[in-house]
Image 1 (spheres, one colour):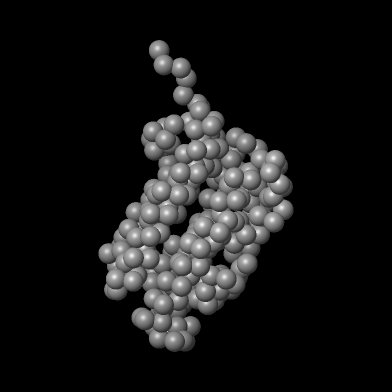
Image 2: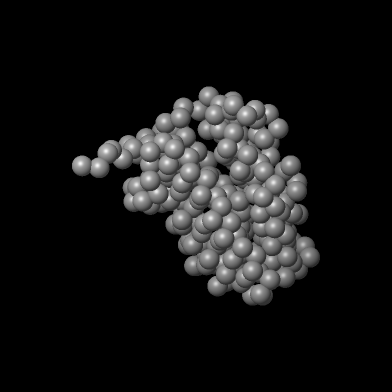
Length: 236
């Protein structure tokens, strides 16, 4: 499960050390796994994650402009499509069932933990190069894939978070992770050669990846405490 997303991702994940486990085995994640996570916490998280995905989509669109080849551009554009027309749709659907419209999600106030994470990723892209941006994007993409793949085998049809787990553990999203991992591997080789870990730029990319992972931990922390939006009342 954790080694299927490319050589570079595996190396970055290992270099991140304990913070990767803090992220992928967080209490929020374990609450999803067992089904004991309070529904209010889950809905509050989904609202913030909808906002996050809006910015994340923009970051992948920025990657299109940072790319050096048409292949890189196509891969990044495909990820934007998967986010906007796939992953975001999950959030809209679940929140709609709770009485929250997409307009309400888009207008929701952004939590400081969300601001910190999304702006860090965007800054990595604006101030750095294509590799800086990919290193900052990778923890979210592959981390959710790793979490989904781990949780999926134990999910039953009546599991309260079966839909979320099936999305990230399912074949479509796992394919997105493998494609993102292949993009990262190829981009590293193109820019740093066949042994990127021996180059001066490697430490900077590890720092980017590890910082984004730390911000993922903060995002889960936020999820345990954030309050959901109130459903819209009947029209006057």
